[in-house]
Image (cartoon, rainbow, N blue to C red; front, top):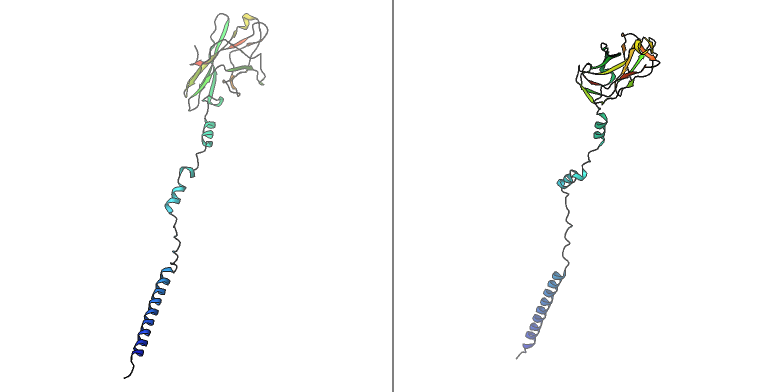
Length: 218
């Protein structure tokens, strides 16, 4: 009788070995899969927000502060409203004699198209035909000067007075003109003088002028 147990046994051993190898292979694949490095995640890119840039450009910090230059230029352009020589006409009114005095109103009239002001005493000087001054400058009479507002066409007046030369005995001359200078101005207005001789030297030769008042005289 033949012995068949050895082949069967060898076959069983081979089957067991194959099974063992399969188990080990399966464990190796699982281990390899579980320990493999995971794919690196791509860096996240951020797109700039156009709105944010626009907002930064329009913030108060990015806006230029207003300059004071325009305000200064505008301040330097303002005027004090004073009447200029070129805006006025000067005249000498009729004589008003009284108590040995000769009194004349010096009248300044606004010939411009704007309202302006005069304040204080006008300058006055008698001159001959060649422009040379006759006698000293008039003396300012005590008064309380005030600002006179002259609308276009309106006038202010100041009194010019002196003692009658026939009474005072002062040395006299006959002027060709009276130069009238508006307050705070430098350029005079020449007014023809037709009222005869005036005192220019000696005793009682003073000529007086008063501050400007509204109107054309008494």
